[in-house]
Image: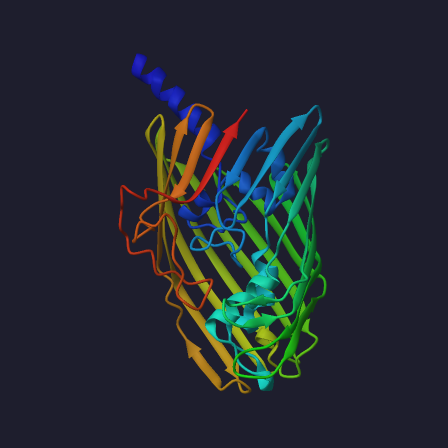
Length: 417
């Protein structure tokens, strides 16, 4: 009887600490910006109304603010505070930079597209992408619970660099600036969830770029209204169905070589289930249909990429002891196709997308304080995942090595009060 009581206490502790971080969602095969079916406090960035289900906590995500994209290999620092006060719930979060905004700005730079003005070297591309990344992002949440649970989120980012920047040897550009604003609205009513995230502003400019290959030019992007709209239906017994659509339009306004308006249309349709197998183990299943069309990809006119796949994910989360939780997932595309029509870029044709991915993670708990992270991801033991030399999105540090001198990467700290 005593052991059963201790096990029940351990399970209770797990339920208050496991819903904690970017690392947890990524270890379960989900996007760290939120999941449609895995219960986690990160879901408030997908549906602002999720602050009703997760509040009264502090969280700190370790990372480097100099990274362009926030990924498992290039984590960005962030953190926030969420609390309930009577009938209202509020929160403030620092550093929730948008990968979508940064990716739309950086894609032609990472693609080494300089047109007739000249091409970037890898070092130069790194300096310029840092100039267009999101910085100083502030998110404010507010919600109330009446006939339904509702909440709003306002996200704002703005920064400028008025000093010339170099790659350590030569000057790369003269000055830069960026700004972004997003409004998120969400509601939970009965078995349904609804959310809309509207990108109201996405602008960046870099002036006086001087690549070593010669020439001098300016780079500037301006986005139109971007929309992410979704609905989630609770099907009971831990299962949920969901649909989401996105529409984004953005253009480059300075370079003649980049004269196309980049348009992105995306639809996701899926089913996910979190199934409690016993007192210590929960299994996760997800199947999803994804379709995306990029017209004038990276602002190159007549460069179109169509991507579609059916993806299956299986994951688990297990309480190894009352203070240690282990989790993991494996995902693969069952059917996939990428169709590239790049008449102006020399690319053309179709291919199957190789997308097998395994992720593992853990939570270490000390009372109301917990530490989350990814494991077996730090081959060289330097405490961080490494990048392939000339990108910010690929990884070369996921060789499945478990090291005792670098136990977890993408580490976060959460305190529930």
